[in-house]
Amino acid sequence: MDKLVEKIDAFIAENEQNYIRDIQTLVRIKSIADPNTDVKPFGQGCRDVLDTALEMGKNMGFDTENYEYYCGSVSIGDKNKKDIAIWSHLDVVPEGDESDWAFPPYSGEFKDGYIFGRGCSDNKAAAVMALYILKFLKENNIPLNYQIKLMLGCSEETTMADTKYYLEHYKPNDLALIADTDFPVCYAEKGIYEANIEWNAEGTNLISFDGGLASNVVPDKAIVKLKNLNGITSLPDTEWVTPSIDGDIITLNCKGTSAHAAWPEGAQNAISSAASYLLANNLLDDKLIPIFTFIENAAGTCHGEAYGIAFEDEITGILTCNSGMLHLKDGVLTLNMNIRYPVSDTGEAITSGITNAVSASGGKLVWFNDNKGFAFDKNHPAVSMLTDIYNELTGENKEPYTMGGGTYARKLPNAISFGPGLGWPKLPMAPGHGGAHQPDEHYSIASFKMSLKIYILSILRLNEIEI
Image 1 (cartoon, rainbow, N blue to C red):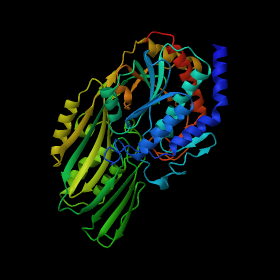
Image 2 (tube, rainbow, N blue to C red; image 1 turned 60 degrees about the horizontal axis):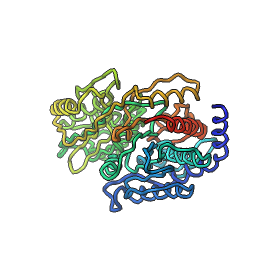
Image 3 (cartoon, rainbow, N blue to C red; image 1 turned 30 degrees about the vertical axis):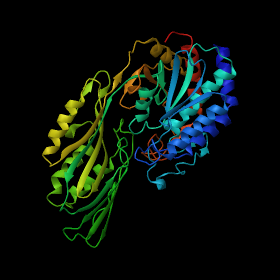
Image 4 (cartoon, rainbow, N blue to C red; image 1 turned 180 degrees about the vertical axis):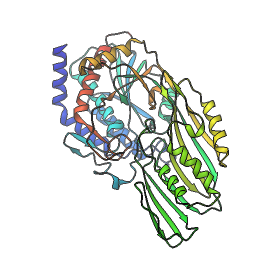
């Protein structure tokens, strides 16, 4: 064991400049999945990043396959054997306002042991990590009882249509490790319920409302314009809202702190900032008051209280609810929401709760998508083995866990999530900065090295058991 770990450590040290370069290369490709683009299936950026990652694998001497640009694979070993797949994704969430970043979001800047850029931690470093797992196996001539694969998805952040296409056209993996969460093993995920609620705002004094960029991010900006009904000449600045008045037009620049929708606790939703300010300063006409009273409550709470859908179970914990976007278009005000619900809850109960709750303010549920959660057998030998390896190498004593985040594990059979996040401290930054889906997203190379070590040893151990 000690000699093996020494060999792994030496490999990681020898390849440091190479994997830093490879992470930077992928981060520098803007790869936001867009199913509505003319370049199918997810846009030119996703095509470019998949081509680049597959070329990296080919240059290392591995077999590669492009599954019609929905996803791709890099593999080593006999394709006629069962396979163990490590899934990562190459698509990213939008970067938001570039002025909020200390480094340009697609620069891949490397400084003081950290790589900066959209997608470095979620999830391009994981793709590079898996490439170097394969490289270790190849360079050390490890006899493989399974084919070992890196699977590269291209629409995880949107609809996960990549996995749907793959399962419809290709054989599922015999064991899939999803490298898109924290160590040790996540064996269950909450359901994800997305919805749009609409209100008729025609004939009101609201001119525009633009808040939020994505359903799965707590919004940190909202801009509101409305007619000045009462001839107001001054408005107070607050911690979250900066107003300006130009004749009969009032503009509010509203702030919040961003966070992932699965973990909204403690974040300040910019839509809530806007709604509270509009109501507190009597800026709305009568038709809008009940609408924004409801929105203030919905965006200002994060466990579904406004909809009467609060729920908690012992397996996956408490329901969370994020008001991710609010936009006015053609007289219609649309609120997009992102709910992570416990595995013993149901989408039907959530639909009923929302429908009843919004009706009093004149709103209606016009669209929803129910993405059910999953629970893997906690007693499967792979779960305990992977958890033990993590604890052995880190000196910790963690247990397998569940979460509200959504990974490919909910879409793929025979799948569990395993790292590569270590929960190590990030650089000190302003609230709402530094994490996945946030400005100044960054990734520690020290963390990468430890994750790579854990994964190499894990694959070697899995190679020795029956899956």
